[in-house]
Image (cartoon, rainbow, N blue to C red; front, side, top):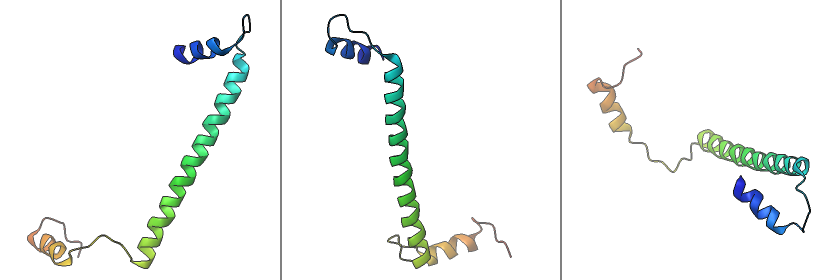
Length: 80
């Protein structure tokens, strides 16, 4: 934080003071926008995943015979 304040002070005019209330307000707005964009990206990823599951169009190959083998060998509990 000190580095950021020093940089700001170097750009201010002689005798000009830092308005900390303004800094807090600006920082809060930037943080809120950043969080919104992260939420948007998360929502988009969830929608893509849900679509893959709904359409069963996964690019991930599932080896059914290997899954059955694990079940029969007893590495996975059987819920029968």
